Amino acid sequence: MTLRAKKLAAYGAAVIALLAVFALYTRPGMMVAVGDMIWACFQ
Image 1 (tube, one colour):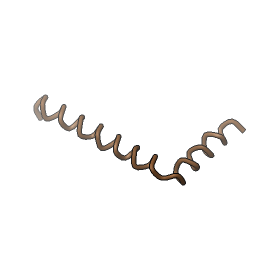
Image 2 (cartoon, one colour; image 1 turned 30 degrees about the vertical axis):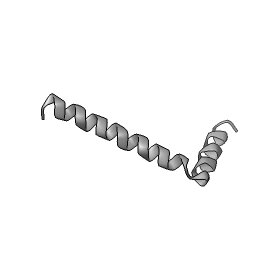
Image 3 (cartoon, rainbow, N blue to C red; image 1 turned 90 degrees about the vertical axis):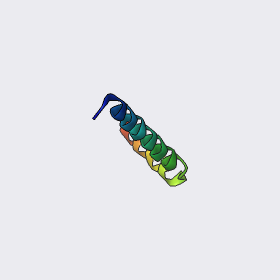
Image 4 (cartoon, one colour; image 1 turned 180 degrees about the vertical axis):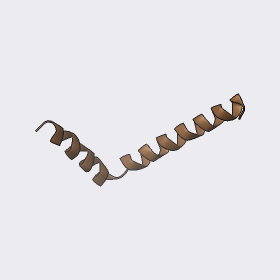
């Protein structure tokens, strides 16, 4: 792979990861679950 292809693949992977995280944040149930998991760490 050339350097340009590696950069393009890295940017593509980053965009996919960001879109996946954004999709999770649009689901209220997921946000409640994450909050519960974080809260459980401090109890």
